[in-house]
Image (tube, rainbow, N blue to C red; front, side, top):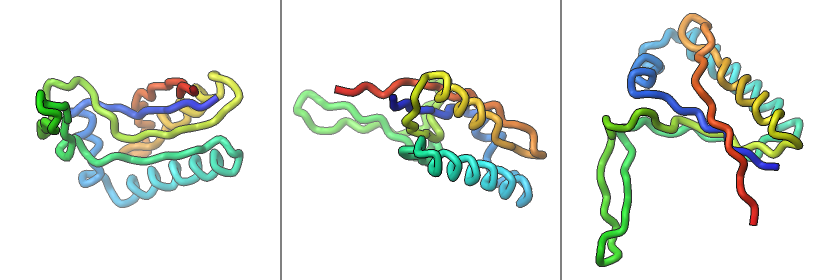
Length: 128
């Protein structure tokens, strides 16, 4: 079963966690943690894809207009409570394993090595 594990945060969390304010050591510890986790998931055959996303300032919302042309609204969107900052797609045998992986991701170190505890939304990928 495939699951998408979505890391989300609030604008306040984004600004507080912006790595431009982190020490070089904190950045390296975070990258090392995620690199090792992603490598283990890849070696076990569970990792399908993972990507970090650009910040909310580069976000746009797109809808179709009445004439089918794109109607684009620039972000960031302060009315949004949370936004997606990265995701993993995993292929695992049980939902509990996807939840285990999500908990490990949530434990990634932030400033001072303190676990970030970002909430990770776990959703099964639908197959047709």
